[in-house]
Image 1 (cartoon, rainbow, N blue to C red):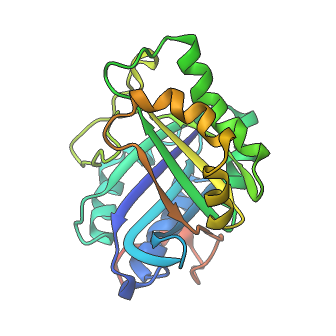
Image 2 (image 1 turned 30 degrees about the vertical axis):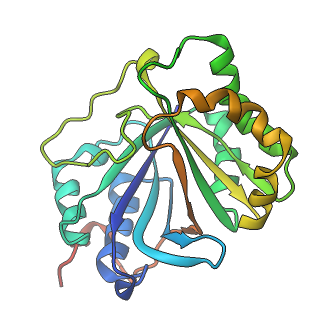
Length: 245
């Protein structure tokens, strides 16, 4: 299984994506946590015009067995890098066979993070609902401009705005109780998605699922960059000091 974490936090655009604190933090995650891939970018406040907001989206692929993600020191440094702004955290698990398509979505010109947060009254074990939750993803492959993606239920919360806290141990929600589904879907442009969203195929499963939509259902959009190894001129990765001289 492969573990992905989606972190969101406020970073004023004046800081720039390559701000030293965040860049050092990503490099530390790569060198000390052996993170396999990292993607990041400002969430778009207007996907049509590509206008960016001050909210950053950071996707980390953690290796199996890494304890850095739950390390209090890492979380403390994350708070420093984000100037103690609240950080939202969602955790997902994928099969190895799913990651190639998932990364196509993350590496597309624009990525839609579609959210379906099922209500507490949704019949989670109903075969029809389960089929619709998956088919609303697979139907995208019939849409023009779709690049790839995948989906999964959040392991750690049913709240899309779950905050990451230094003093909180992560506890996995039992599989039969998971209601928060996130679909990272890649598109050549927002216009392709808009056209698809007006099609009968788009409505086919969404109309079946809509009665069970809970708070937080929606989407955010971001053009993600991929962290490249050794973006910092560091000769000895073990000596990295976050936010230090």
